[in-house]
Image (cartoon, rainbow over all chains, first blue to last red; front, side, top):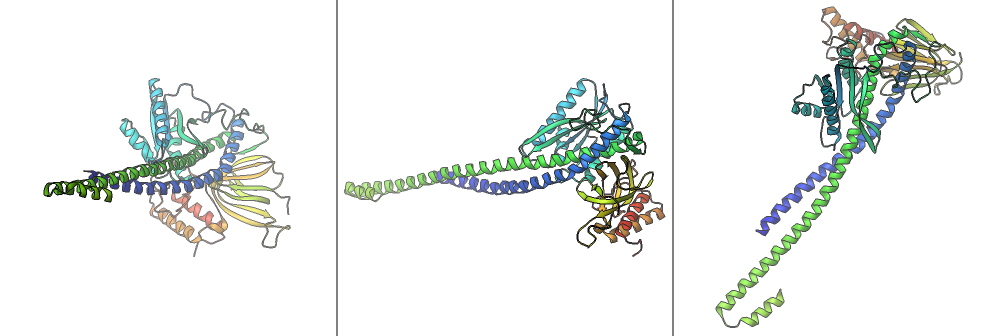
Length: 315
Length: 170
């Protein structure tokens, strides 16, 4: 029986060790991906800042009258974009975004809003299918290494309905990458443009945009703003995709390094246990052999005690 | 040589150019426009166009200090922002002259012209913004999931070729 147990343990240890190899490899891969993803966030920053500045200048000239700006008072039709990963094994990365989205949808529906859901990442598909929700459009294979072209495709899906007046509000649920140690799920209003975000008349944190009127706009500011809206949506989505990717890799790296550690510990514990069981079974076997021999001798002749002394000293 | 000023050509993926120049010319939607030092503050929409930057004091080929070297870039739509600090061109997609794959641009041009000839409708995405930025990796038209009409594809290919200083024929 005990040798059977030993075999079971040996198999388990073997399997844990190969899992450990996998998680360690994933850990290393994610670590290198994080560096890459962070570099891409940095590389996109000049563009993002440039677009925000242009938007701020233009919007301050147009004033608050534009329908593409403001916080809708009572949005009836809302489009939600949720950004998650294609793959799992990255800790709570996917589920925290998805749960936040689900909460948002439930809360909104209680107030009688109608939601349209657009998702990025394969993990979102199964989640919303499980919750019996229809996904308007789902993008996959872009969460790992998003390109600007990916962002453009997603933006095309949401800016169209918004400009056509089919939705009153577009919200974005994604993970912000604050630093390697801090990521955070955030729900943001994407469209209409938020007064108070970029495109404010000066109550932003960065220095108030230079007063308009000194600027020449070509085409006129209203038309320029209309051209800017889709580009701005692309930019925000691109940024969100990049930060999502960085957060995904970070979460995966953390999850995999924890898994590796765990596997290591488990393998150690189990091999100790296995060794003890093996030693026990050897001891038992020896005892059995000795006991058996003794019993035979005891039954065969009368010279028992002498032999017994010898054999026990041998042991 | 004019007074140099700061010029940046920026895409979402990277900064293509950042440095001193004495002249920048491009086609905005309202027509050709050239920026020199001291231009008034300006915000405009950039067409699919070749942007020419008169780069000052580019070290290397001797011209440092006097005169300027022309740097060309194919820009597939974007914005230009001019203020006291200089000129910033923001483009969804842009390529510098020496990065352009001339053969591929030619192939794209031929393919797009072929599509116009056939009267084949453009790829099936209706609400393509007309100055849609081309796809980053594969500008070769027919397989292109990217919307953009063949006319837009032709324009992009032409701009690429012009920026690269090549002709349409092989």
